[in-house]
Length: 185
Image (tube, rainbow, N blue to C red; front, side, top):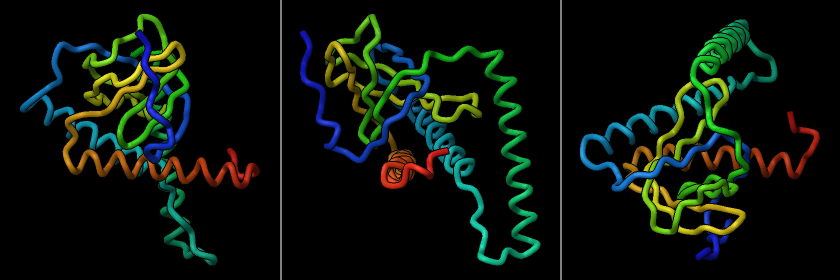
């Protein structure tokens, strides 16, 4: 029986369309397995932040600043090329409309629907160029005909903080694009 989805305004979030897969589990990971997942998620969120943050140039950039920007652009190109090769060898789930917050994720419902209370891993590919996804332990908290909502569980302070920074940065960009549509790229 469907229940109401949580109010999207309850937590800072952003909307997107990303490859997402729900992987049902009978129990959430614990101990060393939970620590490995959390460490991998924390590293991945850090990598996404590094890739998305381009160096800021001063009004009159020095030769060093320009060289660092050039190196940054070359590294991004290399990451893009490597990601493209890896994507060809490793199929991804379909992109779905979603809303990601520091508390959890809501996504467009796809059959078979999980049930409220189900446990699993939410697999989300945050960057097209990175071959590895987040694998976040979660509990289904709401299911409607249009949307499934899951709350994340078991993150360390560092993992939770990395997710909050990621969500905040994307939320800030989303707000800026809303205010100034010409900034959309």
